Amino acid sequence: MPNRVVVVGSINVDSILHIHQLPQPGETIQLNDFSKAAGGKGANQAVAAVRSGATTSFVGKVGNDDNGEFMLNELGKNSINIENITKAYTQTGQAYILLVDSGQNSIIVQHGANAELSVADIEQAKSVIAQADFTVAQAETPLAVATAAFKIAHQAGKTTILNPAPAQKQLPAELLAETDLIIPNETESSLITGIAVTNDISSYQANADYYHKLGIAGVIITLGSSGSYVSTKTVQQQVAAFKVKAVDTTAAGDTFIGALSAVLEPDLSNLLEAVTYASKASSLTVQSLGAFPSIPMYQQVTQSLVD
Image (cartoon, rainbow, N blue to C red; front, top):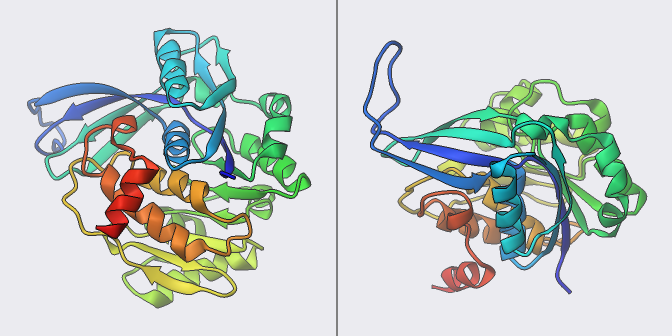
C-alpha cells in the first residue's frame, strides 16, 4: 500500500530570470530569458511525493487571482488532493528566481496567500492529516500552522517531517517537540543550532546531536554536492551525492523531501535506503529547468538507480 502523505505548506508561482551571473550593486545586466512555472516549497514537495508513488493531499492557500487558478489546476493535474486548499483575498504567493549559467539560483519570495494559512484551516483538514502516514511542513507558511498540524498527526500516532526552510534562527520549541524527522540544509542547520557545518563528520554529528537532545529522532542534513548526513539512534552516516551536471537547482531540496516521504517507513527503519532514493530523485531534478517539470517519476528514479 502506498504511503499517504499530507503536505502543509506553500504554493508559489515561480518567475524565473535567466542571467549569466548575479549583478553587482549598482550594475544593470541583460536578461537572457524569462520563464514562469508552478512552484513553492510545499507544492514542489507534494508533486515529488505523488510522482514517487505516494497518495498525496495538500493543505494550503492560494490567492483569489489567475495565479491561484493556475496553481490549483497544476496540482490537480498531478493527482494531488486539493480539497483543503482554500482561497484568500490576496495575491497567490510568488517567487522570483535569479538563475545563473552554472545552474545555481537566488530566490526572492513574496508570501502572499501563504501567510494567510491559519490554524483554523488545519482544523478543517484534521481528518486527512490524522489518516496520513506522514505530515510534511516547511517554514514558508506560519509556524503555528505546522505545529497544529504536527500535533494532530501525533495524536493519531503518525510521523512528522519538518523542512525548516527558509532558514530561521528561532524555531518554536513547541514545533520541534512535535517533529520526528528534521531536514535542514547546511546553512539552515548552522543558523538553527549555532554550530557551523563544515566539511567534516564531527560538525555534522554535532548539529545532529543538537536536534536529538530536543527529542527529534531523525536528522538529515542536506549538503548539496557533498550529499547528506543521516543521524538516528542506530545510524550516523554520510550519504554521497550522485554526480551530475546541474542545469537548475530550484527544486532539488524539495524533490529530496517529497520523494523521501513517499518511500520512507513511518518508523524510519529504512532511512538510509530512502535517502539514497531521494538523492537520486534530486539529482535527476537538477538536470532540467523549472520546478514541477523537472521532478521525476518513480520509474525514472528506480531505473536510474539500476543503470
